[in-house]
Image (cartoon, rainbow, N blue to C red):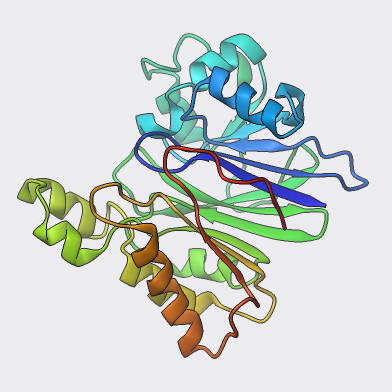
Length: 268
């Protein structure tokens, strides 16, 4: 049984949980640590779990909404933190992680499947204005899971991994009309929408049209903007893409992950 949950998904904080009850003894892992340990513990306890429900952490990049509580997690729990070497070098000097990350550092090997907590993990780079940003493909007890958040524009490599996945978590950050008509200054709007910031609903839908395949069973939209998007808009855009491909309603579980509250614990 594969389980997935979002603690929070958006600029207020990002943290995701993935686990399996399979025969390989996988204890679960976190992707990013942008929410407090107190909140993690409360949510896990509410789902019948505790801090022992995960043994390792993957990091996508060094923006604060993804690593704000990573240092505290290292200090208190001492769990291994896996990331590409260049990102680890940045974390070693980051105010929020520098004092505690070194004892937890685990470098991922580029272009290879790395064993992490009983799963096999491979990272792929995506465009975003951080030190370096990656998505992850995770093979877990026969389930193929891909997560790509904070991705300014889609890449062929990301599409390739998604086209093989049972579950895809993909950014659907903003509606272009809301962004352009909204109160953000011009510089921030350009930072968001010019290929190195975030993925729009339309760009997410275009990616879905390209990576959809018969084996896709779960599609989660993540990192929705509070000011430039709504769950209804993001879901409608993704649903139109599936409709155009002739995918019947219900064949793919389509959900928008909430920003400031935890999602349900999904069984994939």
